Length: 117
Image (cartoon, rainbow, N blue to C red; front, side):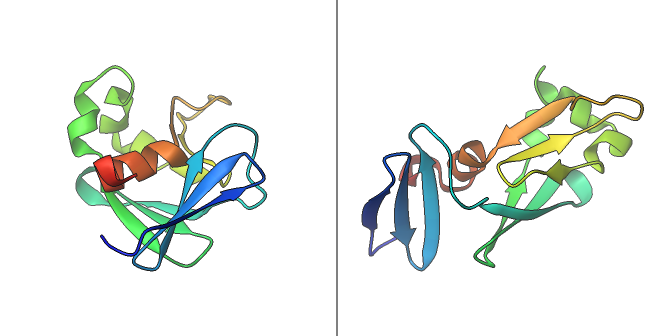
C-alpha cells in the first residue's frame, strides 16, 4: 500500500489513507461518525463489513472459531445473528439480551490490514 497520509481528528482517532481507503485508529474518546454501516455473515466463517464511506472488507473469521472468545460462532444460528451499532459487530444467542461475542472496528482493521494498520 502506498500514498499514506495521516491526520488527527479531535485528538481521538488517527485517520490514515491507504490507496483511497480511510482507516480510523482508536486513540481514546469517541468517533463523530460510526464507521461500520452494515455487516453480513457469509458462509464458512466469512464476514462482510461495509463502511459508511461505501467501502467494504471481507474478514475470514473461521480460524478464530477455535478459541474461547469466538468459539461460540461455530453455531450457525449465532454466526448468522451478526449485527452492528456502527462501532462493534455483535453476535447474539436466542433469548439473550447481551451479545455472546463482539468485535470492535479497530480489531477488524487489524485483522484486515495487519501490520499496516
